[in-house]
Image (tube, rainbow, N blue to C red; front, side):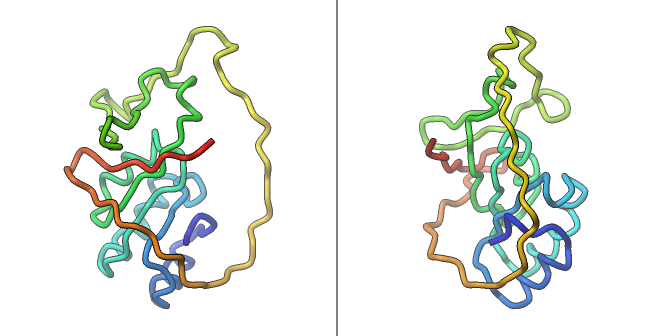
Length: 153
């Protein structure tokens, strides 16, 4: 639960009601790293596991700073934009780039390799709290590596 949560109050309500075992957080929707850091300590103090929702090339960094990080939802959709984007190894683990900042550089090559898609916009749904379905545990093994969940395309 969490892909459509935006504010600390939204996350607090879900956590306080014990409405989920895993928060699935969308980094852009919560306000980037600043928004992420508003609710992260609260979830950590209560032992709520956290997974990201897409944007793995950036969310990986937020997940590494989250003590209760559980898994990284990986999507290769931005690989054409970032030629050195982290990709899962044979064990399904991602390693954070060591370059400055996010460790990413745009592919300045052929513009045809840059995927452009029309983004669908949706109104924010009404909040509702339901218990999540059972999810298999895939733990974090090392501080610089987080297991990846492959999105099926």
